[in-house]
Image (cartoon, rainbow, N blue to C red; front, side, top):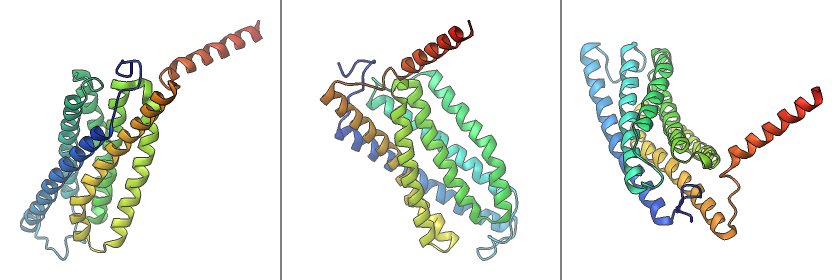
Length: 251
């Protein structure tokens, strides 16, 4: 019964570790590519804008932050699509391939990009160090909300578990970033730390999502209770009852 679309999906420890490991490995690969690309851009800027390693933080321009925002858009787009393809392959009962899902992912990626690009440029013009923080928050927003959107589209009855795990994942990742950046003084060291931070952020988000689903699934198996699956129906019934009472009080 647990495999039915109307009940919690079956999940186990093996699935959690496989999905978490995939999230870490994919994040690690893309983080290396990003850091290498940024280093390449630094050299290009040294030629084009006559900037050097010592004054690159003090002499700024609007084009470099724009390029970083575009790189982040490309990174998050590829990572989001590949992650969804992987999830649909490992768990086809829950994550179904659909053009609607890909369209919604694309729309959200572009929506975030349109609003966050001015922040890249404004803060980047003041100091290039700010770009790392904007970049991290860009990753946070995309990673958490893309997963929530996928949960809504694929498993909307249990979206509350998605809201709960997103809080824990965001909290842990914020602590991770703050501690890392606080312990590192140079911009170069902070940039290199992204090679580990990005895959860890990716892994923690998937890990907490899977853990919350596992806890709820075990709760369902042990108690046969499923208080969340009809939560929207319960809300609808309460609203109808409130409307009925309001109409009767005005008669």
